[in-house]
Length: 54
Image (cartoon, rainbow, N blue to C red; front, side, top):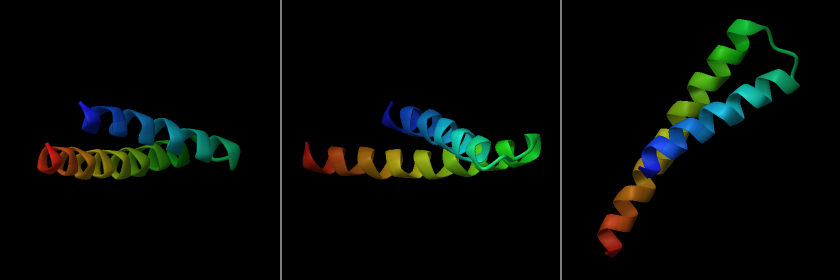
């Protein structure tokens, strides 16, 4: 569940960042994809960390 939240949040932040920089449609898609990958990886590490603690 944390991974999915990270994926969605990362995509939204990437999309917002590209929009603020004045990017076109493909720039926004690329920023959203990279943000989603980073968010999902952070969510994965958070999930693994929580599983190790509990």
